[in-house]
Image (cartoon, rainbow, N blue to C red):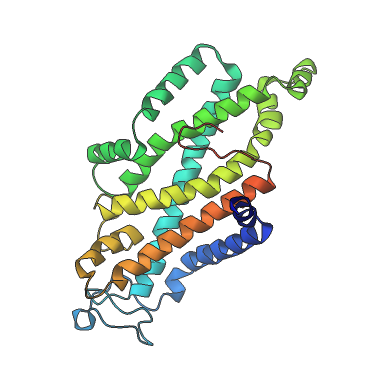
Length: 283
């Protein structure tokens, strides 16, 4: 039964459905300024905690702000900055991990000991510490997460490069006179792309949850700007009378993270990445 469930999760139909749903969500975030029915930060206390209506499809919050508009604008923060964190961390990790694994020597030793020192601590604890030093704010959260996350990617790419550089086609490229840069660019990097694609679908989900968690704690985006985690924080005071204020952003976080993970599972099967990677950076 478990095998059947895993096979159904990794089916092409699931990947297509998740891809279409995520594309639509990204499209909605891009078009949010034009399709949002109201200004997401406009306060109108006369309309506070109103139920859903034609004018306010999901009702209003405790300050009379349109819940649907805030969800759409909050998606721009969650998805946009999660993608930025992943791309930035990946770029740094790819560069350092590839050089470390291919060149080796003292550079590899120093870089990997540094990565192991960072990985000895829980990710969220280090991010909280860095945000405490930098100060609260979305830019500080993004910087802190990039500074912590790149080490996992670097370690993973180092392992991939070490396994690749002893292959026959790499030896043939050396014999043919190709420079180290050409070997890395034309032979090493293209062969680590499948794990990168799978990693992207999984790690963006993690980044969304981390951003939401830090915003919930008041360390991420600052009021009145909308973000899913901060919306949950604001709605917790009304959990008995208006639970939908927490339910809407919470469900969006759940659905988006599940879709990214289902897409990652399906792509790992499709691209031949048989083993899942984790926070230890190993495949």
